[in-house]
Length: 380
Image (cartoon, rainbow, N blue to C red):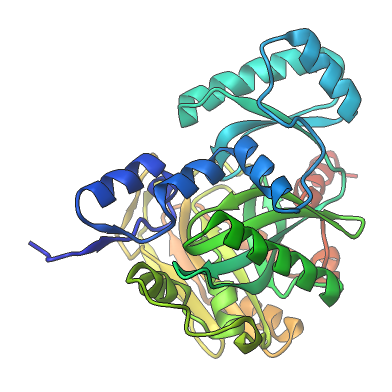
């Protein structure tokens, strides 16, 4: 017996499973997260887009509902949106259930494949269509809300360094975006929280291109990259989740939230740094870095067996500095000190990126890393 009164689902699949949240509460426990009906609403990407449009938040152009079975209508819609388009699973997340389509000939096979994958992975075969933006950045807004209709945003994170739609490096503040634009989208996210009667921590995710923010989805949970926000605001997001779940009011208002310094997180994955193929196995030697401004979040240890069944994340290294340059310098030192042997990891990829001119300038698009890897393969 543990005398537990509440269940915190972490940031895995159960954290956004409305049925699980419902069963937790029906069993007499407190679910540390949003209400099941909120998770259900925002977990369906089609319904989430409708809800955000009603809340006055702009979405990526595309279908307003799940794609119909009528193939003629699907073709008509793609022509209206204009190629390239991206087909997405309505119940997807974590970078899964997406397929980019560049030509009409590839459209219907892509829809069919994505539906099959969505059904197998998420138990929901519905898919929708969006315009595929050619040079966007991935910017997300962290929010907190309580049961008393109080809501705040804790600024943004830039998560544009990605591979296969999955994040590699996250940082805050986002380089080279006008503060007025960030404030405006933060305020809209807060207003959406109030209209949704949202409870707990959450993240609104946007694509940012040509000075415009386009909503893509909401994560109704704590994010893997939450330490970045914690370091620049001094606010423990998990602690706030617990307080909100206990029925307490937020202890601060928007004007109390102050941003200081710069933080960068590198996701350390058990995978080949060139091919991204997972590398499960036993860790024969492990040493976590330390020093000023360095935080390491990890569950692994020497002799830990990395299983082949789950996400390849084995740890997160977060570096904080007074400036972006200082945070990058500290991260370089931390990665040089980190030891993970017995399996392959992407530490060397992070070390390369922290010397990359485009990354150092800031503001790379979500396609940058894959374009960079493709050029290296072709020798361009």
